[in-house]
Length: 257
Image 1 (cartoon, rainbow, N blue to C red):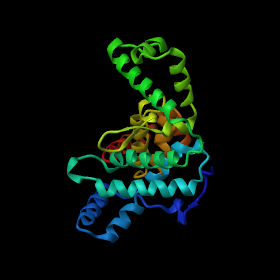
Image 2 (tube, helix red, strand yellow):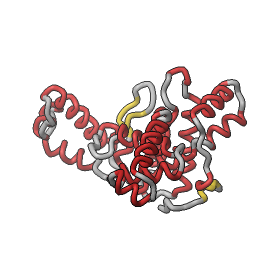
Image 3 (cartoon, rainbow, N blue to C red):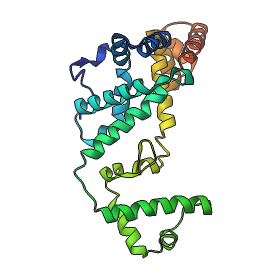
């Protein structure tokens, strides 16, 4: 899967615009009035968000163009359902919607199938594990899960092993009046939590509003860990100027985070 493609589905990703907070609010007010041109502009102004999201699925072997189209469907659904009065940033609301749409696509195109009885047993085991974790304040043993389900330990192990294939994680667990809950939604990833990932997207979007010099200084200071004196030598300005530019850039970023 090539993520260094410039043109995806006929869109030149290197020239995608970045909308300001004021532009987003103005456009969204027009969208609520039924202005289709405003909606198209809003979609186009948020395509960078779709690109950020689909990179998370780079190891699935899917074509970039296909994931991009699916991600755009999620973006449109997010725009159609977003409530501006809730005082939540659009990206915070849209990212889970886009992720959900991509997950559904991957699930529906899954070539690996596990028998229904094994899936049912595995889902029951996962739910029992969750109940016991709450009850015992620790992760339960397989024996405890089997006892809770009144099943043989071997049957539980076989069922859980059956859903260990990567694609089977996108099988549905149950419907709860809204979006389907998948096995993936019950598995914790301590290294790449959605909250941390959303923070990274938020930082990236905020930095897009800075000048090239401000971006360079913040990159040297906080991504490469250099001191203000080291940055001063590399950029060719005084340490006092580095300090002023750094503070100004961080203050500017906070407006968009």
